[in-house]
Image (cartoon, rainbow, N blue to C red; front, side):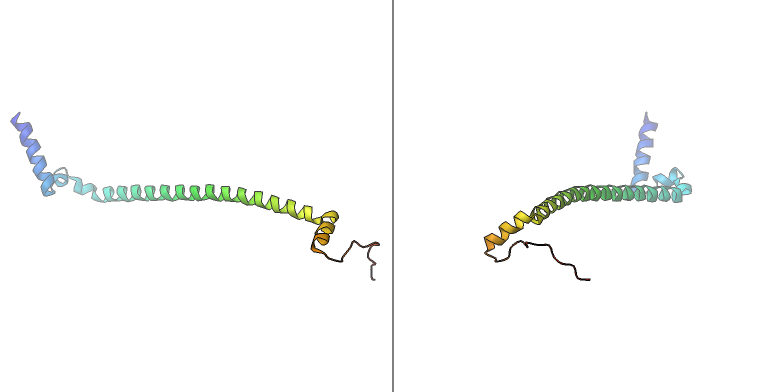
Length: 109
């Protein structure tokens, strides 16, 4: 039992001194460990960027739908203003002397 406690105590003191990884001979794999952590950090960063792009895309889709509805409403309003009866009513309300022509316009050649 004393060997176990001695091993734990030695491991703890080695950890505090920064020698634990050296005792386990991790110095041979140091570059590989650094490379692994860089790849993990890069993977996390790219995942976050992809999620942000997808959120932007969803927001843009919602905005596009709103603009399509707005466009359809304005098109409907313009079509209703294009009717001859609507134009006559607007001219009468504004007190204009303009009226609908009695004969079609002549073409000049």
